[in-house]
Length: 135
Length: 106
Image: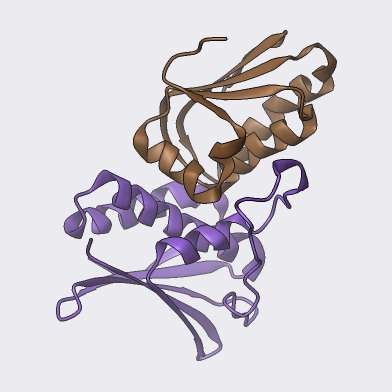
């Protein structure tokens, strides 16, 4: 179980964090496609925290909401207060590749993969909650 | 070095392998730069993905970077990718600009 597990906010730590997150995902999801998608979503959220928040640490929780049959992640950082859901870049997946902006794919992916995302700040920390119902 | 780029020529080859996450993708991007620098000799670029276990947007961006820098005349292939790998490419729409094959055939 992951409960407010602390990790240093560095890119080289991401594989370790993702290994622990993936172990949680596999407790509830059996389909390889969805296990991989949720891992990708978690990575994209963490990359934004590591690269842009300025936080030295991040915290990950993962729990399963029985009534809703939903896996819930919570990502917390102590960086600059910022709601990533306020400025979701538009990605047109039909746009010609030569004209594509190379940024914005990460948030597009986690918005596409997750059923619901919620942001709040509490005690001066950013909290991003991400939900995925069992499929 | 992670040794992704295996050949530069008319048919240039990149062997993707393991996990290409945000901590690894910069190494892939670096390895693609000599290829971009010699883009005049490249007619096709083949990304072999049969040993690729995981890719996230940072890795996809490296593929997009190569395609954009090489220009529209260079055909880019993604060969041998598993369903889970293809799924990520399809979510981003990048698959439409690649030639997807199980085994490379010109």
